Amino acid sequence: MPELRACNLASSNQMKLLPRRAPVRQHQDKAPGQLRKYCKWILWAVLTIYLFFSTSSSTTTSSLFRPPPLRAILPLKITPRAITETSHELSSPPSSASSSIRIYVYELPSSYNRDWLSNPRCGNHLFAAEVAIHEALLQFPGRVFDPNEADFFFVPVYVSCNFSTPNGFPSLHNARPLISSAVDFISTGLPFWNRSRGRDHVFVASHDFGACFHAMEHVAIAEGIPEFMEESIILQTFGVSSPHPCQRAEHVLIPPYVTPDIEEQWPAPEKAKRDIFAYFRGKMEIHPKNISGRFYSRRVRTEIWRRYAGNSKFYLQRKRLDDYRAEMARSVFCLCPLGWAPWSPRLVEAVALGCVPVIIADGIRLPFQESVRWTEISVSVAEADVGRLEEALDRVAATNLSAIQRNLWDPALRRALLFQRPMAAGDATWHALRELEGKLERSWRRHRSAEAR
Image 1 (cartoon, rainbow, N blue to C red):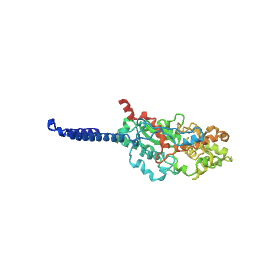
Image 2: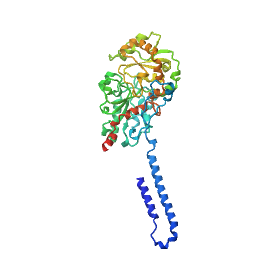
Image 3: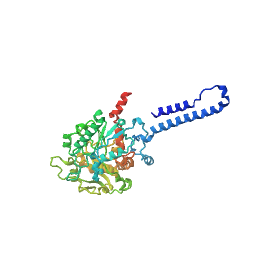
Image 4: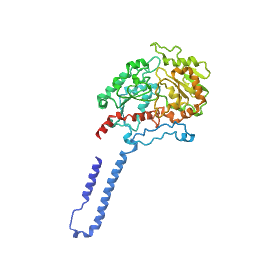
């Protein structure tokens, strides 16, 4: 109680300064000097108290301890060039402290996260959003170290870094037991999970089918989301427009991880020479049925290869190439068909390199749709219409291609889909937090504060 101490101190000083009463007639000659002395001491005491309270107030309300505002929308409408250039930097109106989110990051044993970084791939592969978001939140101005002040609780578990499979892809077999163990850890030592049943706890599930933790949809559906996570908030890359067991939990859609240095490796999109009309490099099975009897990409990639492999407008390659992004940077259209899951890192790579994404994945939901106007920067083709793909692209090239490219080449758009390290205003983590802010009704602390009022 510093204020009380200050007041007591001032009162004490004033009590010492009160002179002992004496007959006025004996000290009439000393009265003016004593009055000046008393005024000096009283002025000093008042000034001290004022400086104390003004310093204390400015410290507690310092903007350094407030999260940055998380409200903005990308300027993707077609506007005159001068207006577009001035809108490239995202402007964000200030948000009051009452609407800014506070996040507590659990400090788990390193076996749940940091130990996995001994493999360099852990921090830069397509599922590495779980690492990037954790690192960003450790430096987030809205991070609180007292869990009683938190709106949300982030549980940092890296489940995508077990590269023990023969093909080098992450094994997700350890995902469920590892997260279950982490929940046991935090719920045993602290009360915050149990009091809300995890409703205000946040996980990252940046895998094919989110928190279902399996690359094959039929297995993912059969196993479902772990029961202990069903009440939590999942930051996930998987999203479809129809009901699906793997998006049953409350969730925020995030982009797949693409290293943010992708922007630095090639010329600015508007300056690139684009001599490839339609491009795809990746897995295109001639016989797509796998050993489980499922058809890879629902036969879409096979149909693309069968129809357009000999077409000079299409540059199609079935083998992966380390420098494939250089080819994307030369392309006008980049095909983004579904694989086992509807989403693909090609979506983000295409946007970052200024190549118009051609989305061939029925019912897909894309990240940050309130801010990134996907319909103005991409082309969507139904899976059943792959046979008319060339016709669709020719029509776009002859009509509104230049408008799509103007929207696509906005630097703020590229920033929104990349996870910067550390987090930057307008980047992917920033947008994920902005959407998380819209779920504050799940905050146990906010709910109790509202009840108290």
